[in-house]
Image 1 (tube, rainbow, N blue to C red):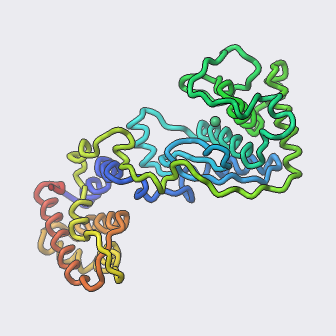
Image 2: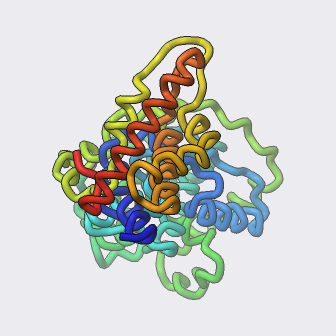
Image 3: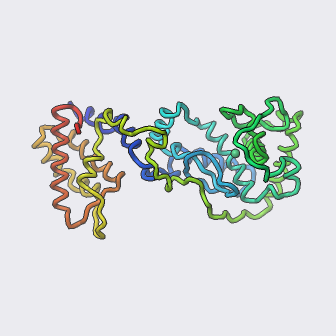
Length: 346
Ligand SMILES: [Zn+2]
């Protein structure tokens, strides 16, 4: 069987996918810091600085791209903060933003954020150039694909590259995005388009803005921050997690949660720490009674510790000995299962 096979089962994609799909989004523990999307955010922050703009919007993980209305905060899809979640997004929807697309979307959203932070739409000339900010926002519109009154930035599935025509707020965000993009060559590219006056207007506004103090960012309210997304990941995609259960041969969450049910006692210990502290002793005993080699057993123990940490499982300190016996039994039963069938059954 071998430790490689054990590892392949406990951390194989089928198991990981089911663990994730079967979790609530708020419990996935995703955050921007140190994640793949942090690189995209940092790049756009650098672009702002390079243009002399010290304003930094608040970035937060959400269900999709977007700024809450008139709040200078940028929602970034949570799946971009974790490669495994990005893989699920792609499996479920058939697409995923690449680095370039994510950058383009971020520049557009930063356009909204800066508009809201400085209330630019109230500045002289904004309405003349982009139209009324208060115009009703409609979800569908009929774009004119030949219009040269608007810049072309985002490629939208439904409206092609005519998203700027949706609303004056979108027109501003798209124009700002082009202005912010390094080496976009807008002065040349748009020189014979009426849209050039919008770009020149944004450039002028940004020169003025550099001299203004950075505004205090009002606190929220944020729309769908990941911490409030209590929906199960599978349900978020309109799926039933159970569909993926059979393929998840290394799934141990149910059994672990059985050993460590939710407790409310004040004096608690972490299940993951309990397993890690006794790792060597457990590996020896479980190996002795299951017939698996210690390396294979260690793979199983590490899996239990990992999942216990992810699920934030705990037990009352008073029950330490009892829980240690239960964990030994669980690990032995998993190891025997694995020794006989090459998977964890149940
Ligand atoms: Zn927008």
